[in-house]
Length: 75
Image 1 (spheres, rainbow, N blue to C red):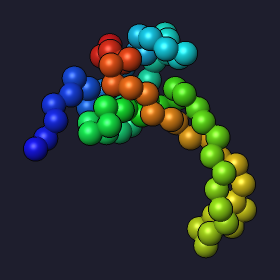
Image 2 (cartoon, helix red, strand yellow; image 1 turned 45 degrees about the vertical axis):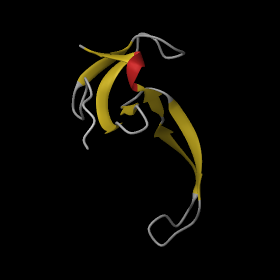
Image 3 (cartoon, one colour; image 1 turned 120 degrees about the vertical axis):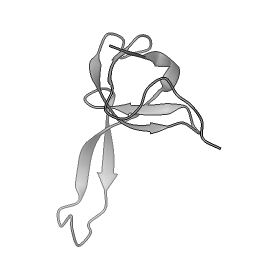
Image 4 (spheres, one colour; image 1 turned 90 degrees about the horizontal axis):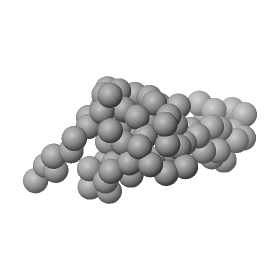
């Protein structure tokens, strides 16, 4: 069963509540099962990355973190 959401990947949204209120960006992915969206440039988190064949250096990398879907609105 597919869950219907008010935003989809590629939509321009603005954060309407929470710590990142007022920030604007493009939705990169939607996880409807967990009610989460990832918005480009909003909620940057640091993640420790292990060394791999592709990533020789490893270290700490910045990524966009998920936000609850109810906290975003289409622009």
